[in-house]
Length: 196
Image 1 (tube, rainbow, N blue to C red):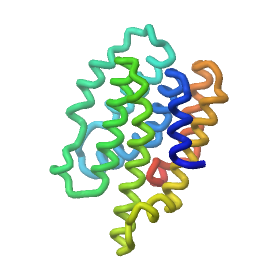
Image 2: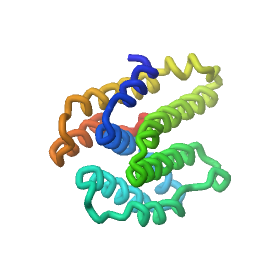
Image 3: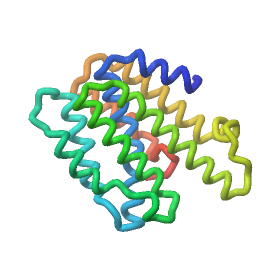
């Protein structure tokens, strides 16, 4: 399954399918933020967790009175600044927060483009992590090395599986969302392969 093919498949999903797929990908990214927060004492991952839960709720019950704007205001001060931290974990933390903000902006504006870019953010996190690892090991971190790396292959496979799941899911119900969330984190690791 090629990467381009996955992105094409995401574009062919309907609005709700794209929204739940994006939220499922963030379920895999969010623990990276928690680990960063734990290591640095910066930010409150409970705020991000709660915001993601509210996004799931909003997708399920679009007419609910949940104010995603208020959630965005809470999250913004919790996004780390790259310049303030000298550790690799800052990147995945920023990516997780950025993806979550993107999901909320997408839900507010009903903008599918925001949902599509979340899968790209997730892959970019993985690519950056692989480049970092290869460089530390003194290996060449070119595009081919990154693309063929088992972690990137796995990210592409997981995305493909999540798309399959969403396509076969049918209507977006509480039951289906619960199953999708479980499927997203069934392997017990974040998108960069950190075991939870």
